[in-house]
Length: 334
Image (cartoon, rainbow, N blue to C red):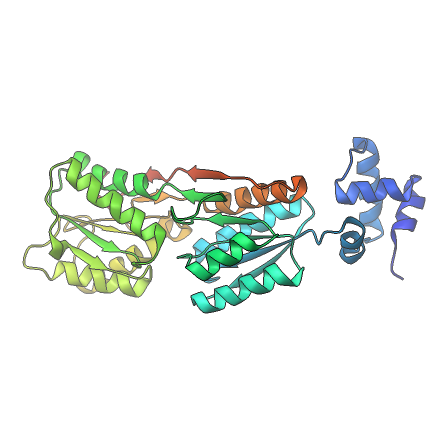
C-alpha cells in the first residue's frame, strides 16, 4: 500500500503543511520536528510526489544538464558534483550529452521549450550564433561551465586554465632548467585547450625561450592522440627535454608510447598533464599535472542556477576556480 503525505503527518502529529515544508525546504521547521518527520518518512518508505509538488509550486524543481560527452572521468565527476548539490536541495537532474553542435542545439531547444526543466547547465566546446540567440531569448535561465570569453551577462563557472598551464611550464623551466619544451594541444575549437596553449606560450615568452613549431603537435584530448603526439615529438631530430600534454588522458597515451619506444619518463623526457584525474595516482612515475576541482564545477553551477530560479532575477557572474600545480615524479622531481 502506497503511503501518502497525510499518513506521514498523522504519525508525526503535525499538519500536512508542515510535512510539505520539510520536503520542499520552503519555510523553516524546528530541527527536532524536521528530524521526526524525516525519520517517520523513512520508516514508511514515503517518497514525495514530484508532479504534485511541481503543480503546487508552478515549478518542476528539475535542472537540465547538457554536456559534450558523458564518457570519461572528467565528465562523470562534473555530473557527480551536479547530482550531489541538486540532492541537497531536493531537486532532480536530467542529463544529456551530444557529440555534435547540431544535436546539442536540438537538446537545448527541447529543454527550453518543453517545460520539463526550470533551468539549464550548459557546457559546450563552442557557442555558435544560433545557440546564442536561443539562450538569450529563453525565459529559462542558463548557467555555463567552462564557457569562452564570448559569453557575457550570464553566470559562467570555469577553470583557470591559463595559469594552470603557465605554472606547469614555468616549473619545467625554473625547477629543472629545461629549454626544449614540447606541447601536445587539445582540440582547436575547445576553450580549455585554447587557454592552456596560451599559458604554455606565455610561460615560454616570459622566460625568453623561443617557440619551435616542431615541438607543437595538435591533439584531441584522447589517449590515442597523446600516444601519437608523443611518438611524433620524440622522432624529431631535436628531441624535447619535456612535453606538456593539455590534458591527462593524452599524457596516459604518452606513457604507453614511451614504453613501446623504450624511452624513460623522466630520465629521457619529462612529462606533465592537466586535470589531475584519479588514474594519475596509478601511473609510474606519478604524473605532474594541474588539479581541476571538477566536482566543484558542477556543484557551484547548481548553486548559482537554483539561486537564479528562486529569486527570479538574472545574475551575471564569472567564477574562476584555481588549477593548482600537483608535482609528481614525471617531471623529474624526487
